[in-house]
Image 1 (cartoon, rainbow, N blue to C red):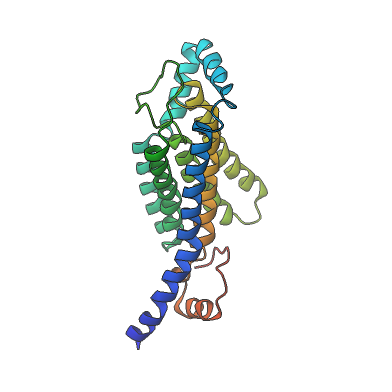
Image 2 (image 1 turned 45 degrees about the vertical axis):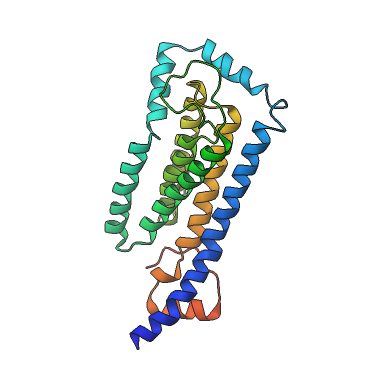
Length: 247
């Protein structure tokens, strides 16, 4: 009976995941590539003024802000994000006694990374023509991977904490202030350090937020992680998953 139930359940779960997770990410990838093509080709001259922003920031650099922005950039370095995601996923599992929040965070972080890598391969936008304060490939300017990764992780963590913070408005505001503040700090740092154009960090913010929204909608109420009775009822009725903090 269990084998028969699994045979009925997993095709439905797979179709559901494809509709709520994979399809939006494919669309996001296509839109990201389209935006990259627009800003590097038809709209290149129209947005040339953003180079002035990079030059002005480079001319006004100071040792103090070099240090501060180094910290901001480091907060979203790949090794840092990978380590923080792994540790936080384990903590979520131990605290909430289930995998839902952990899987959500991993998907939110890694989905934006996959879209970013795809864009760097096909868009190949040159970085600003100023002195770069961080080492990086010269043609991976669009989108800002540091910015999108910061949104994926820090906003993802903030969303989980907000959903589990009941009747504490101040705490919810604090979680969102940190969750949004850190990515903005990272974006400003990458812009200051000559690593990206303004449109690069702007789309990095959009990319990260969309990945968090898609992963949250698809996974924080995922049928595969619900109780068997609730899961089968949800799948049989065709009702989409809802935000929930219950096991």
